[in-house]
Amino acid sequence: MKLLSEAIVSEELNYHLENNLTLAENIFRAGSSKYFSTFNEARVLYRAGVLEVTEDDEMFLKETLVGETALYEGKLVHLDFPLPTPSTLNEAEYQGKKVDLNKPKRGGTKKFYVYTKNPKTGKVIKVAFGAKDGGGNLAVKLKDPKRRKAFADRHNCDQKNDKTKPGYWSCRLPAYAKALGLSGAGGRWW
Image 1 (tube, rainbow, N blue to C red):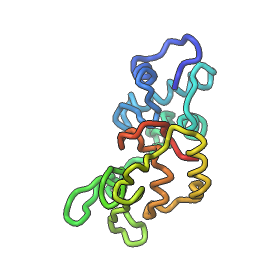
Image 2 (image 1 turned 135 degrees about the horizontal axis):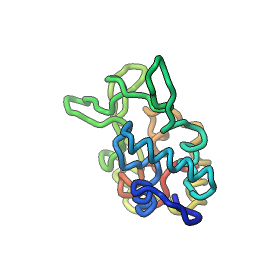
Image 3 (image 1 turned 45 degrees about the vertical axis):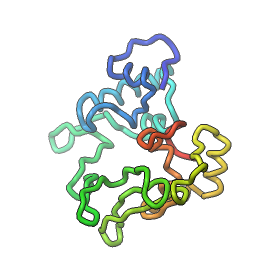
């Protein structure tokens, strides 16, 4: 995100701008008032043509209502913000140890791994993806748009929707680049 012209912004949004953070990397606890106000402020500035955003942030601002509220059964509720239920929390147990679901990490039998829940069985599984044995000199090339597009085309990334498959995670690796210590763009391959 970056400002295209002079505008007065909150300290919170300014922090995101100075540290080149996307809305998806919101520094506030999901569901807090500051979390929602950051989205609302960014949406107002974006609609006014003062804020330039990434493709993913544009999706948040144009296609969702995150941050907006409405009355439901006499109570004010936040829109496009599902509350987690015990079955959707990102904690689980795999072979007797507590693990975070859907958060890729480095290591294992391949370059990366992630724990996810198999929707058919309800069991937590470990999905390894990336180059075998860490890949040696095979670096993830996120910075080069041509290589990113070639990868996405070669692997049909726009069709990968099964979280239990390595291809799903490989195609979404840029979204987790910062957490994995990779340099380059965030978002998706395609």
